[in-house]
Image (tube, rainbow, N blue to C red; front, side):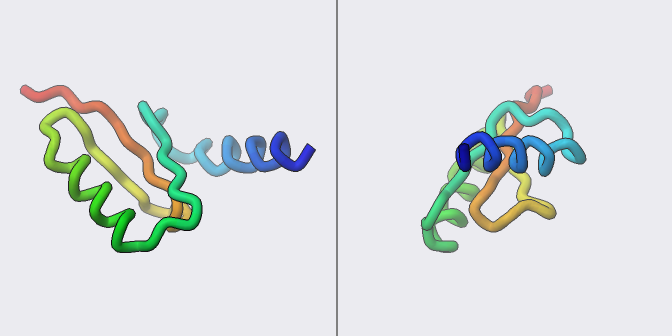
Length: 67
């Protein structure tokens, strides 16, 4: 029952954001690891990441067109 409530809360949080291609949850990861993952993803010409307004353990990832 708790899992469903958690999923509903997570969905409500994303209502104010554009539809991401992926949502990454880091659980108990350190901020250094999160930063490394973000930096690695941002090196791709085809991915964009954002965390604005989200809890520290979440990351939105979107595919971008390389024009």
